[in-house]
Amino acid sequence: MKNAFLITLALVFGLQTIFSQELAKAREGGKFGYINKKAEFVIAPKYKKANNFADGVALVLDGKKWGYINPDGKWLLEPQFSKAKDFNSGVAMVLKDKKWMYVDKQGKELAYSDAEKIYPFKDGVAFVRSEKLVGLMNPKGEVIVKPTYKIIKGFRNGYARFSTQADQWGIIDNKGNIVIKPEYTSIGNYVNDVARAEKGEGIFGIASANSFNKVDGATKLWDFRAGGEYTIARKNEKIGFIDKEGKWVIAPQFIKAKTFKNGYAGVYDGNKWGFIDTNGKVVIDYKYDDVDYFDANGMAPVKIEEWGFVNAKGELVIETKYGITAGSFKFLSGKVAEKGFVDGLARVKYNKKWGFLTPDGKLLGDKWFENLEPFVKVK
Image (cartoon, rainbow, N blue to C red; front, side, top):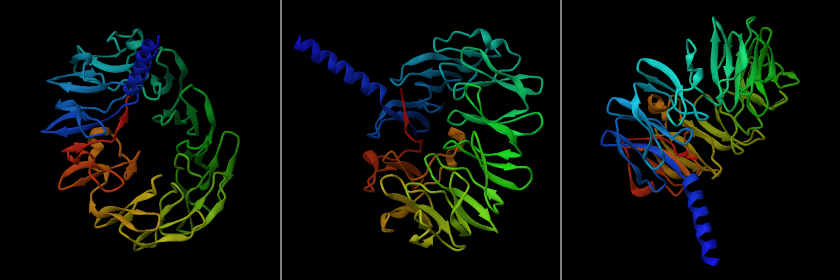
């Protein structure tokens, strides 16, 4: 009985390990593979092109065809597609025999592939079109929003901006529910239950499901960060900070600024960057060419010709000799990744190679790569 319990326990922990692993795409010798958090290749670098893991599998180019691999490197769907998109919610959009279609993870073509034009799934929905209007479909092929809108922007964390035929903007979720009514001239991304918005011409404020709070004197607003209490606003050509109710909490006084994260925000005096706390007090003096966000570990990237890291006391704890800007990865991921420490690791560039630094400044696995992307949790 005891042995059976121990075997069951081992299987449970084994499954937890499989389902909790994180993998990062890396290039070595001109080919892509995937590494673990010891900087070891667990999937050998043998692919000419590859995507990050998404929905538990990764899209890779083998020879002249695309296929999908599992986290163990074995094929889920062998290379057979001329083009393909990532899986999302169990569905992928692929080009085979000159036809775009939807397939499931068994490679079976789904019946709703017969639309005149199809779109990839993201955040559990795909666009459907009728003439010039757009709606939404779920992974079952059910139209959850009929094509009645002029525009629906890409979904981010389950929400998207949309425009009516009368050019009024609102927010919709990936279930098809209208979260913020379309009554704005323009609207930002929905974050922390609110979105920046413009009502009429030049009236800027914070919109929620039930209210619109005008920001006094504002001529421009920026999106909130996930979990952030304040965001940036401009008044009289100066930058300050507002809360979710649209009230000024730090008066406009900066030339430029970045939103708060973990209690600090980068601010620019017209010459150099420093950091303020949530009271607006300068806690790290203006002396950097650029700065980024503080991580939960109490460290932030700062630039003096090159990038390094400071702690909350302003002490340089990792010297400024690295590149961290993620712009070179746009061609790989389609978006700019976060700078600085993410889940305890910072991706940096040195001597034209990329690696991960730990908070003590050591190189993960003592290993550099030709290219490197952030770790992705593989379910």
